[in-house]
Amino acid sequence: MDSNKKSQKQAKIIVGVILGVWGFITFIPFLWMIASSFKTNAEISQIVPSLFPKHPTLDNFKELFFKLNFSVYLKNTLVITAFSFVGLFLNAMAGYGFAKYNFKGKEKIFLLVLATMMIPGQVTMIPVYLLLNMVGLTNTLTGIVLPGLVGAFGIFLFRQFMSTISNEIIEAARLDGASEWYIFTRIILPISRPVLAVQGILTFIGGWNSFIWPLIIANDEKFYTLSVGLQLLQGQHGTNYALQMSGATFMVVPIIIIFLCLQKYILDGFNVSGLK
Amino acid sequence: MMKKQGILAPFLFIFPALTLLLLFSIIPIIVALIISFTDLSLAGLADWSRVHFIGWNNYKSVLTDTVFAKAIGNTLFYVIIGVPLVVAFSLAIAIMINFGRSAFFKLIRLVFYTPSITNTVAIAVVWSYLYNPSIGLFNFILAKFHMGPVPWLQDPTMAKISLIILAVWKAIGINMIIFLAALQGIPKEYYEAAEIDGANRWKQITKITIPLMSFSIFFVSVTTLIGWFQFFEEPLVMTKGGPLDGTTSVALFIYRNGFQYSKFGYAAAGSFILFISIIIVTAIQFKIQNRHEKQGV
Image (cartoon, rainbow over all chains, first blue to last red; front, side, top):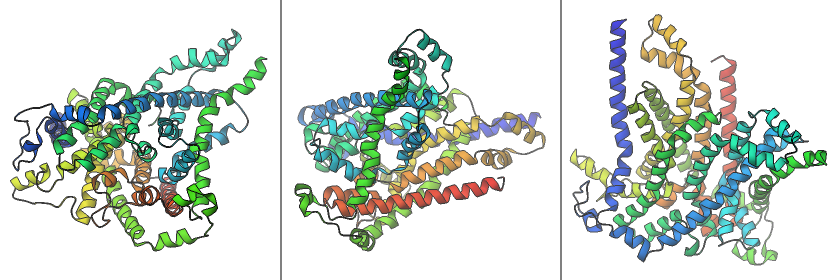
């Protein structure tokens, strides 16, 4: 038994070393990106690179915001992210509707909602563009936000969680004369805080990273998001890697920080949502 | 009064989300199907009378388009190599992380998860720099070991592999989390019993862990496969589909025809071929899974 324990400890150390090395390799692109964003382009172009910048500089970030349009892209990205929280609320409402009411055709409608998860984005891309074009919403922020506002996966997760809330709470509130809307906003939503937290973080990340709809809908730089702007930058300043790395750092690092602060909610959230 | 509210309320709750889903997911499928039988282009957008039904012509010409054939070949290359790698690596890492409960293992879990929340465009830009043939980090490291230089994005076949490496790196995190949740659901008694019977660690993994994980392996394979069939952002940002269309995926082909050449009808036909392929492959996966379950595996 003692030798068994010892071999178990040995196995643990071997596994730890493998994971440590593999994990380090996984993290290299981030380290390289951040280090390069503080280098001058001359330093980047050297044949023998160094990890740490010899003359750390903020010039790349200044150029992004003062010479290029990154402040506009940032504003658009934040507006889009804020609007995507409206979508989160609509998902929660729909989730509640499916979880706690009985009505004719409920199962069929819910299946239809789930079926939309199967549809590849490439199929809907063209018709949605034509539709938005017809009503004059191309090249507007509304047009960028609307197509991805609600999603079947979000509705599904809210429904899963809200079905576990006991009916008695709702019945009691109804007897007290509370309106359906009051029950939803004052009772159901506060109870659903764990799933709201997960969905909120995922919504933020999704909005911050939004790329395909801004790319298709916005023809004008004043509606570009950070992703689209960075792609444009790569096309126009193809050899200025220092500038590109600072743009990438500006997009990636805030998300990593938010994730590290809230990781408990995200990683545990997979259990909350019943995705086992 | 109260009863009336009770009948209406559920519809009011689901109405906004359902309307948006109808407008942006369900109706567009029907529209796409109709468009795919027309010659709709920019000219047609301005003047609807210039749009004509042309029957199966779009489908016929897409299927004989050499670029589309190449895109199918490339997409199959991505799927056949990428999907097994994602499943194998995320499963292996999840099993290894499940060995320990200490802060170190928790930290490693975060490290592997991080790539999956970061922006694909930003990451593609970073990897383009890492892959740069003359000043990129990868070739510099290889040169230290007297290897290379590797034409990461310059050779059509190597470019596909380079895109797969990046996409696998990014996909491991989320799938690892799904596997970890499943691993933690396996009762400890199973392993204790196996240990008493003298089964070593490797035997325990192959005879207990993996069979009990068959459902989550199936789930991850299906979702990963669907995702890789739509492989898009990486080739768009890093190679624009080149060199020589060597990295053009079906999704990129559709995007390019639709939004760069404004051949809406043609692109819609391509998108339906993609959709039907996904449905067929997913159905086959479900069939295989069902047979396995019936056999009691």
